Length: 218
Image 1 (spheres, one colour):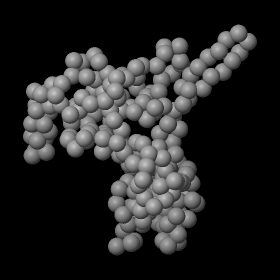
Image 2: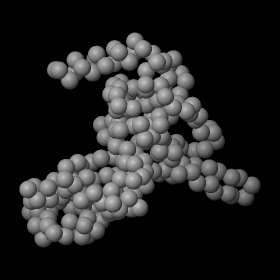
Image 3: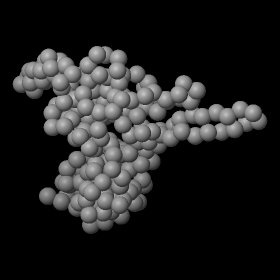
């Protein structure tokens, strides 16, 4: 109840200061050309929907936003309700949209920072280990006789595991377990005992393995 009351107070404050709010700080955002088929946005939802975020050291709730996967930008509506702009990525500590939690990872994070690019990542587990998902889309162009068509690709997902301050690219049960080789045997037994199949639900499997690894490492 205390958190809910605080959220209402913060929302009221942000509404009262309007354009002076620290949230309204970023470059103008332009939508893509209408001839490009499909869209660039998270979960293919081409509309502003309410989300929450921590931006420039402040919490903002019930913010109309979209997440552009092609440009890796959080797009929000200006206080006037129709102007749109993109937030400055390094100032976005985290945001939540459609019950998915995203964090910003800076370029210099970890001793093995070359394994991961700066940007927004969905955080599906956070403890001693951290499991991240990078969502992305891109624009492709095809030509057929005298016709040229452009379209956004289906969203792709790339997985990363952070251990001991370093990020590792992963995407299979084998590679995930190799990173956690000090508990590999115990994790294999855990997967088998709980009938967890990586190929059926990679994100659930990685979450369960990371949580179990942290339990075993206590």
